[in-house]
Amino acid sequence: MTLKLGPLPDRESAKITFTADADLKAALNDYAEIYRQTYGKNESVAELIPFMLDAFMNADPGFKRARKQLETARPSSPPTKTTEV
Image (tube, rainbow, N blue to C red):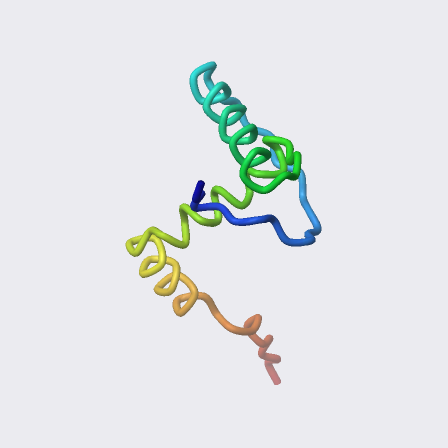
């Protein structure tokens, strides 16, 4: 079996909470089970979601273009203060 999501790397995390409908929750649980069967490692849905989102965003060329434009529009350093004399 081949999944778009490969084995998860070691990671640090930040907690984000969201609400999913029952169908999405069931699909996420099924994905976690198929992941366990494929890689022999039990990962929770909460552990898989960030990597699924990352894979989704990395596969979205429109998002990548817009993000690049956003990054170039941001100032690279904070504005300097000018002092009146």
